[in-house]
Length: 254
Image 1 (tube, rainbow, N blue to C red):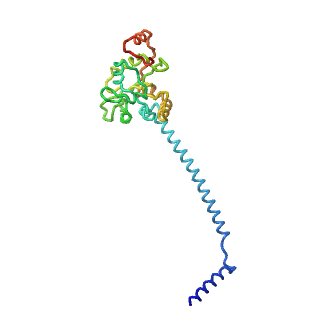
Image 2: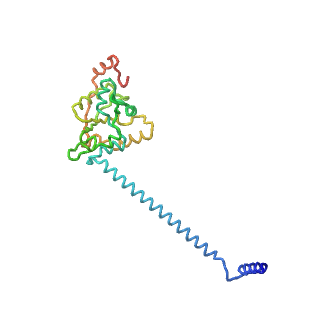
Image 3: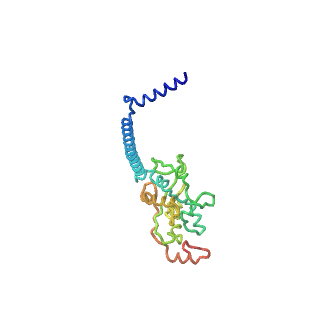
């Protein structure tokens, strides 16, 4: 009986292979594969196009947002710039300390690691900048949203008296301290040599920070939320000679 079943299976298989009415749909399969391939290719191309225009739209929206963030009529433009470009104002109290100690303005690269006598950082921290709050009614900045401690933002417009240092004889430091000593609350000062990374800029972050600051530098001198202290006179020659002769006194280019 088993022998008969095996023979029958063999016969059926042989008959199917020789039956002219049973054909393999090779042409149809090939055609379907071609159509499928074209469909997948077209879908991929369409996806690439959609992604391109979507990314372009996102970039356009980002550019529009940044333009709005840094417009002169935006009361938070200065704060936005300080955070975006990692620009750090220096504390007025720190300037008093280094003036008493006979030290010049430090470079940003060194200033960011310096502390005041009470332990505070010489430069305003990013966290403090993020907490900075603007009162639209009073048109003033405060340390936090509680509005109890006012923050005076100042930029110093000055000349460079030497290639190595803008204020080698500390005349500008003296004038800055003298010009701001009457203010109450917190006084944060933008001085380019101390607030921006100086050459040589060793890291990509330092280079990007400096470039971003340059793109919107006008905000630090023209925005309504920041005051400008102008020091347009150089150090007098007599002062230079006196400082260089003082025992223990050093200049930034000595």
